[in-house]
Length: 379
Image 1: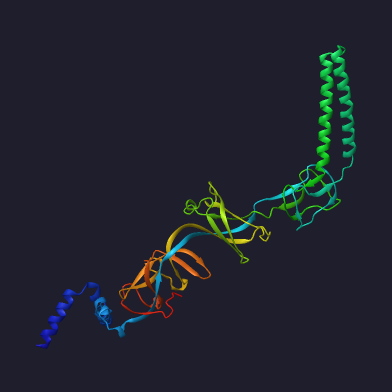
Image 2: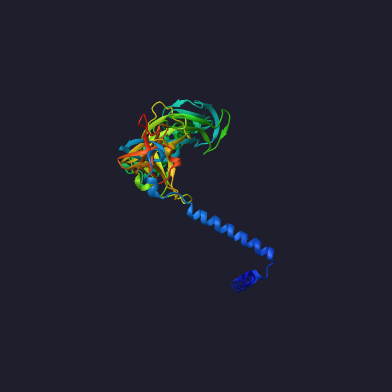
């Protein structure tokens, strides 16, 4: 009877098992069979041993729920700002250059000196320019007298119109030559074009200068600029006259207004230049200091939070975890402004309880036991 049973089982085994399996040695068939049984046992344990259903979690006792601390946030009106990384820049700066050639006779101002418009910065030796000017003045006097005589003789009929015209031309030519020599004399004294501060000096007494050579750099202390660039998406939100706050890397905070918005993007970066005009009565601002430009663009409702409570959802969105009817809900936010005292965010309901402690250990849709912060703050 047993032999008949085993024979029947053997025939069924040979009939239903794949040919490649039957070609294996018996010990390999036993090992494979044991492995299949183990895998099926593990899988069945995974399927039957899953976490409790949401309904069971939601009906759990308070003592079984995860405990989190929450703070009530109330929205207030807040200026939405665009923050731009930039630097300070003098609105007026110029390299004052020579217009005539010659040897530098004197330097009247050095680096750091304050000057007024018209002050002589560098002085070039006259050489024979003074003598040429005197000669030109004498020639003007001579041709003027000759013109007067020619006019008298013309009235009496002793000079023709052509001769009178020649005398007038000689007099005009002499006056032009005198004006030229006077301009050259004046250009030997290189003057400041506006009130400012000498930022650099390029020559010393005794140096030889040619037309176009630099004498000194002059910077106007007021007004000053803070400059930066914004993206194509943001430039449309900024307009002339918009209020701005500039935070310098030195710790100074200066208020100003947008004075320039570029109409053409930089061909390489596709960014638009923005200029904010700043007061600088005390001449404390310096050119080239790193600065953050905060430009107010509109008013929106926002809440003040600590950046430490922000989390990311599975799709990478930035937000907070809040508790609504004892259920955890992820809520995305948009950053309105950021500063040393915290962050202002928008996109939340006017009143919302956000998780301040424990947000890393709970998930969206989970039922929790919410405990209010003692101070009621989200920090």
